[in-house]
Image (cartoon, rainbow over all chains, first blue to last red; front, side):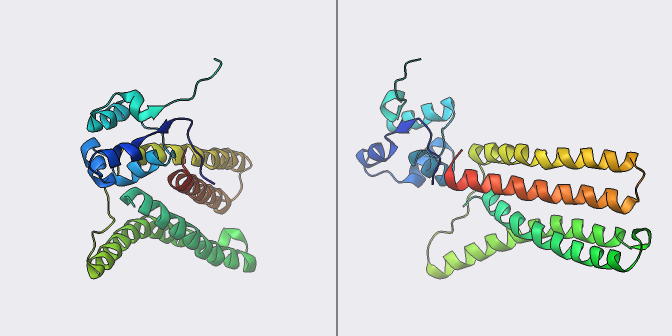
Amino acid sequence: MSKSTKVTNAIRQLRFAADEMTQADLAERVGVTRQTIIAIEQGRYSPSLEMAFQIARAFGVPLDDVFQFPETDH
Amino acid sequence: MTISERSVWVQLVVMPVTALIYFSVVLTRAADMPVKEVSWVVPLIWAMSAIVGGIILGTIATAIGTYARAEARGVEADLEESDVRDKEIEHLGNRKGQFFTGIGTFAVIILAMARVDHFWIANTMFLAGILAGIHGGLAKLQAYRRGF
């Protein structure tokens, strides 16, 4: 069973909205491997803040549109 | 698959196989004679060289194999350079492996204090290194496959 991070994301939907951008294209724009994009998309890896901003910038949307973090009582 | 992940897979094959062969040879010899007389230095040098060389050559060989298979099928080979995620996984695996390195170091100090034969000191350290490598490798593989 995969160990999902608490951070969820809309990368898959954003890729399809961006002319069906491939994982390889996004990886190239962000400067990481396709494996890393796959891991982020599937919630198996939380990117650094810097990488998160790079991903949001690749789609031309704010960070909140790409990544979501569930509300807690704390 | 990145080069780093490929290297972890190779490491998890090379280390246990080499260790199994080494310990089979040395412990078989030790069963027939006092450990002071067992020739373990040359086999240990061979084993350590086989591990380092095996991981390097194995990683190169699997990369060539992947490239050749992709070429034959007319698709792009799944050979990627390592990135920041690979580095994080590398650190995580090394941290996990340190558990056995620590135990091994402690055991070696105790053995040295007890003035046991060098055979036991060297082989305990070697075993700790092997266990650290396998444990760290499994942790890396888990991080690659299931996340961390």
